[in-house]
Image 1 (cartoon, rainbow, N blue to C red):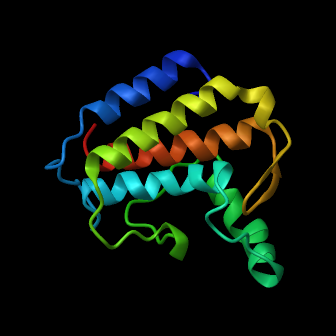
Image 2: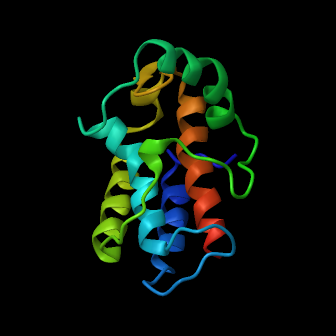
Length: 150
């Protein structure tokens, strides 16, 4: 899996994002391109903003026990996989705003670096090592950019 903490990989991902436009159509799925960008931003909102309540109790246990290994492994996501409710974006979004937010988040992650993330507590899965953080960030972006043909 490519390393999102590597500046060249970050630049490659941003170049892919910059190929999108408000009329880009998905190869599969129901989201519009603006919704997809907003959807991708949720991962970073959970990391950098106090916008989403942290899961507790049974929900946290289920996420750590069943969902974590799917999210942080190198195994690619399947097309049309179900997503957590917090990631569902159903209303229209501002394409340019969401695109700029996503690029800013990706740059911030790269600048913070892998050492910053090593054994850092995630919003939903507890402590993750830097490889797990990378897999979570990169795999999600790559899945959705591939979904939109870039």
